[in-house]
Image 1: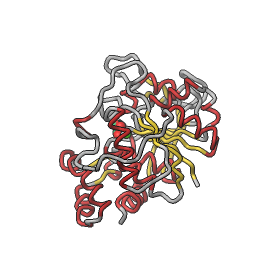
Image 2: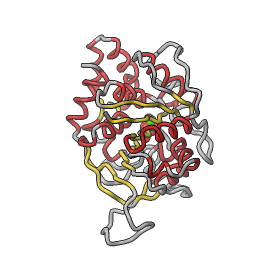
Image 3: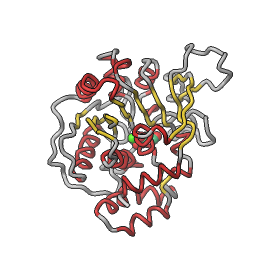
Length: 313
Ligand code: RIB
Ligand code: CA
């Protein structure tokens, strides 16, 4: 059993990632924490509760987190995820109640409970993770690993930014939080746009039609979540489900250690994740690599798992 805690800003692909994790028999979801990003924190919390309720999940604590980045104003992406944050999916107001702890409180409690058996999976901006590290720096050596969906590292032909030519949304939304996390010494795997925007890992219009044809309750939800973006962009990047899949089964991805730093001051490059891909004998910013960057994915196996665990085929 791989014990995981998911920090998320649902968000369409976050919702798919939660469904993936909660339908993965080898994963024990010990908690969910929500953060401002795609939508406000309030909407993110409600959407996480809605998804757990839809799946009939009970006993998984869901705790509210940061309503704004550490230093900056929130910049939500409702033009992508819709007013509710769940695209075209309509789910009833949740009866499930949030946990009485804050996101930081739940994260620290679960690290204390599971220690190195716990993997934190951050699929939104890193504000909550950075806040937990500021409260308790020992988190970096007590947790097993942090797997993030974040960054663009130019380690594949797809490693460009999605907010700017060089910055990926989760890092760009709170670059100071990302820098705290990247500098903390926490064992860190980054699943970046280099692999999540690879056409082989996207949900195609053909796959959407297959899902729509199933007519099951879960397939209808997935279709309603994805339909608008698949039609607008000719496919849907499965950023967060891929990060969750990599956290649950690291055999799905290949990673390479790099020294990585985050731009927190640039006018044109704010939120850029710079990986030093030069000769390893050159020393830049730090002596040892601080991030295991995902450089390739078994795309066929990932899509198979996605259809099985998210869609339920
Ligand atoms: O850049 C993609 C990331 O930003 C995903 O986590 C998506 O949900 C958004 O948060
Ligand atoms: Ca997300």
